[in-house]
Structures are given as C-alpha cells and as structure tokens.
Image (tube, rainbow, N blue to C red; front, side, top):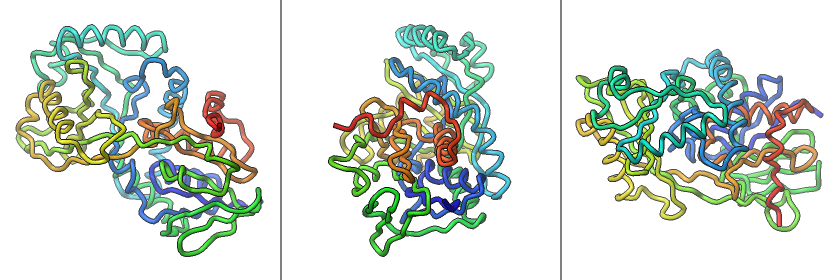
Length: 374
C-alpha cells in the first residue's frame, strides 16, 4: 500500500492526525470545508488528566495520562514547522472549593485522585493566595496540580494547520457525503467530486459529522454520537491587572463546576457548562459562569467582555472515544467528547501506529468503534 492518508475532518483530532502521518513519511490529504470551525473553536484547551477526572470513568484515566505524557513532544515537533504560537503553558492548575460544602466535595475528589494514582498537593488558602493574589479571601479549600498544562485550542489548531500545509499536505475544501464501495476499494464522495481511496489509509475524524456520513457500514451507523453543548466566555484583563491569574483555576461554587483559563494575550476563557439542548449561548448559563468565576476571582468584574460562544462536542454513550479499524483501510477516530484537545496527541499517534501495524496502548481496546452497534 502506498504511504498516503486521507483524513476527513479538520478539527484538532484530524489536524494532529495529519501531522503524525507526515512525521511517519506519509503523503496527506485533508478534507474539510472549514477547518477549526467546530468543537475545537470553542474548547478550553486544558491538558489536565488529573483535574479532568470524573467519577466512574476509570477507563478514561489511562488514556488521558498517556496523552498528557506525549503532548510536550507533539508541541515541540509542531513548532519546528511553523512560527505560529500554540498557547502552550505549563503553569499548572488550582482546584478550589468556594465554600465549606464545596471544600468537602474537594476532599472526596482528592481521595478519588489518590486511588487513581494522580498526584495533588493540598495548599492552605494563605499559600494559594500568596501564589495567586487575585483569589478571593473567602475560598474554602485549595489543591495544586503542577502536572496539568494547557494549549490555546484556536492557536494550536492554526499552528497544526500551518505546519501540515507547509509540509505539503493537500487540502480539499469540500464536504464528504459518503464513503462508498467495498472494502478496501473505497471511494470518498464529496459534494463536488470524489477521491478513490483503495490505496490510501482513510481516517474518519469528522467529529459529530461522522454520524452523518453513510456507506462504510452495514445496517445502522455504529457510531452513537450525540451533541453535548458547552458555553465558553472570553474576557480581556485590563493592563493594570494583567496577569489576573497565572494558573488555570478550576472550582466548585455551590457544587457547580467552573474554570478560568489565562491566555498569553491577556484574555481569560471561562467555562464548564454542559447540556444536550439549545445549541447557542444560553443567557442564564453565561450569567452563572461569570458570577461563579467572580466568586473565585473577584477581579473578573473589572475585565472587558469579548464574546460568549457555544460548541457541540461529540459525545458517546460511555464518554469514551471511538478509535479503531472499521475496514482494512478505514480507521475511525471521533467521539472524544470533553477531552478532544487533551486526547488529540494520543488519538493521532495511535491512528498512525495502527496504520503501520504497530502496537498501541492496551487501554484503547475500550474504544472499539463498533461497541455500541445494535
């Protein structure tokens, strides 16, 4: 088989996959009418295997830890092929309980993190405010996580796109309508043409769009994807207050999660909502995010409002991604839900290793694309 890959989807997963194929010596074709316009555009970008852990999602933990481990290498290698910034920061995370009840929630979470062998450091509120003076004096409990990093998803995705194009990737600005034919004689059909892919590896990394592309499966689509919407607010810190915070601040305010992400350009991203209806920024959700963020960092009241957006993340019934072979030359890589930015390094690396017949982490066995097929 010729070393050529067709990647369908130009979000963070597809772009990272293109880059890793090029690293492995493949020629690459990217098909997407408007790269970086989906969930990646609205993501927070926290590379936080510890802070992102949720109860009863043990199968996600090894995936997140492995992807966080290899992420610095991805950042370093991408930066060799583009001068664009990635927004990569290694300042760490503070987990905060706003009041006593939220502090109790944090105590339970700390116990769970220890069980999962995820290290954290408990700080006094005085120590936390010495490190981040803008924190409210009313906070109850603080945990520091030095191993959590972040990227700015829009910046990193643009850097990835710039790198893969400058390395010679072909970009077809079209929408895939079907993957037709008999395995392995596949044809990728688009609105304005088609591409015969019998001698190529085809990667379906189209996020939610993967659920609407027919032809590659028999019967009903095995990918049970659903949109999970999340609001994200961006504000600008006044020059005299910048930087307001240097670490990512993740907190619980009356048991509601909220995160505050500092960017290199003097802005903050604020988010943490999750719902499965109304694909537009919800006024009440934006109000709650700003109120809760201000409860943790009062200086946010002095910032300049920039925008509120809402993105649709591709969720699966068990919140695990779909990653694996769907034919002799077709690989599925989608359904990354809330962890698409973090898992991009692992997902891209694993897809290329699969295409070469190389070993992938055993934890990916839980991500079989056909596990929810009726």
